[in-house]
Length: 333
Ligand code: OGA
Ligand code: NI
Image 1 (tube, rainbow, N blue to C red):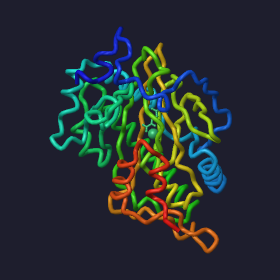
Image 2 (cartoon, rainbow, N blue to C red):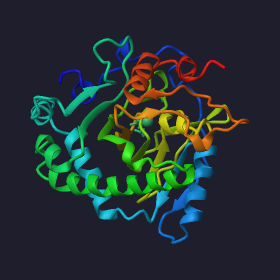
Image 3 (cartoon, rainbow, N blue to C red):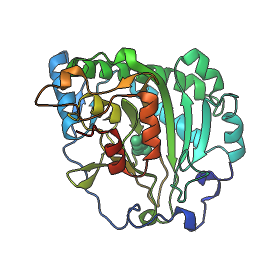
Image 4 (tube, rainbow, N blue to C red):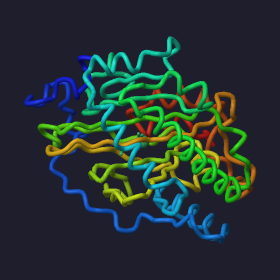
C-alpha cells in the first residue's frame, strides 16, 4: 500500500518513474472544451429517437452524456462522497478493506494493473470490485467508510439497470441481442491526487476501453479528454449526468460503424479528482465479431472473429500501441 499515490504524494516533487516520455505526457497543450459531445435525454418516450441519437453519437464520438437517466441524483452524490472518503483512508485501512476476498474480486492498485512491471507509472490509484451478482460480491467490498456498502450497493444496482437499458438501445440499433452476451460487471473507482507537475505525467494514458460500455460518474473536477478529429477535447462535467463511452467490442460488432473512442484522464495541481467507471463487459466465451446485420457485399467484415478472452489477450499485449492493436484485430483482406 505504500506505493499508492495517495500514501506518499504530499509535498513531494514528481518522482522520476512518473515522468512519462514526451509522446505520452500531457506537455503544455491547452485542450479546449468539447462543445458538441451529445447530451441525450433518456426521459422521453420516443425510443426510436433515443436510439438514433445514441447511434449517431457513437459514430461521431464514441462518447455521449445522458440526463434524466433514472438514477437518483442523491444516490450519485452519496456514491461520489463515499468514493472520496474511501480514497482518503490511510494506506493501512485501504489494504484491510480490499483484502476480504481470497479470490481477489476486490483490490486496489496504484497506476495500472501492471504496476509491478511497467517502466513508467501513472498518477492514479484505482479501487476495483465486481458488482454482479450483488449479494455475492458485496460481502467482499470495503466496510470503511461505514456507509460504503449501504450506498454503493444501491448505486451499482441502479447504474447496472441504466447500463442494460443503454445496451438494449444498442441491441435494437445494431440488430443483435447484446444483453445475453454480458459477463463481468465491475466498478473501477479512480482517484487522481493533486499532482506537482501535470505536464510531465498522466492520470490515465490514452486508451479504448475493452468493455461493451462504460457508465462513468465524474466529479465536478475537469480531467477527462477524448480524441476527436486529430485533437484532444475536454468532456465537461455536467451535474447529475453520466458520461457513456463505448469500447472496442461494439466497434467490432458494428464492423467499424461505431467508434471505441480513445480517451485519457489528466491530472491537475490544485485538487484531487475522483471518478467511477461501471464497466459492462462480454462474457469470456462470447464471440466478438462483426454482426451479420453490419456485413454485406459492400461492407466486408473488417475484424476477425475472436472469443472475448482471446480479444482481451490481444488487447493486453498491445495496450500501449493502438495501431498495433487495431492491426492485430483486423482481417487481413
Ligand atoms: C477508465 C477511464 C476516465 C476518468 O476508467 O477507463 O477512462 O475520467 N476513466 O477517470
Ligand atoms: Ni477508459
